Length: 296
Image 1 (cartoon, helix red, strand yellow):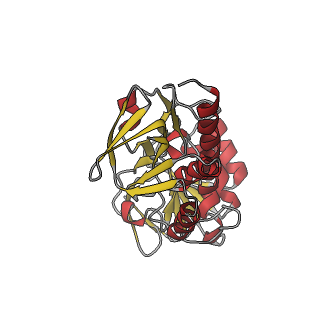
Image 2 (tube, one colour):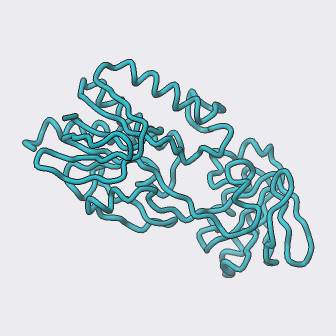
Image 3 (tube, helix red, strand yellow):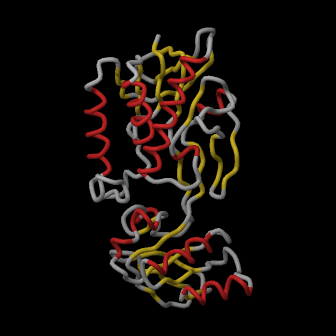
């Protein structure tokens, strides 16, 4: 019987585990190895780790966590979870069942990308969702925003700080007069011709009328959903954020099911490595305090 099982061993999960390890709690981290930012060569915006590869950041964090004697790791996928009389049970694909008093879900999200040929294979390389993570490296070159809804206005208003910006409407929405004025004040151009495909070494946008607009990088929004069914299995409430479904949590990162905590991308509309680490630390501390101040 562990004090807590953390499902997901990326930035949020390892950060949550560290708080519990330092409280000398017996914990298990179960990780299937599927980081959301696995397509990106480098990670940015995380103080002290700027420009490092995502895999190296995780490897260092895991090695530091492994130095704590109360921490165990299992490289596996959790396929089912259930509530028990003493807490929770997690069923893995290859290593059987594990029991714990508390459960932390750091399972991340799945990205549903716009259906444009050439986009998927450039995701994380020259097509991104977070300007703070990847905008600076475009070196003030031409930037595109591929609209998916009126929420893409947010991208188009932000990105001129990183380079001259073109908003490709692609039939997703039509800016109203006020939005057009806002874009004009920011110096953003608008392209209403539909996008046929993305090509080239970076992100060349091919339009239906035959024009090709060469870009240093392209930004767009994915539709997100929890990458694992575990929260739904337990009956945790979900809420709709601007980009999709998220696991609902309170200030301590506890879900609507007592004893189940969640952190990281699956609980936030806006995320980054730095934010995930902070989110995990909050969940770890919240989980620890729940073990102290509750009778069950």
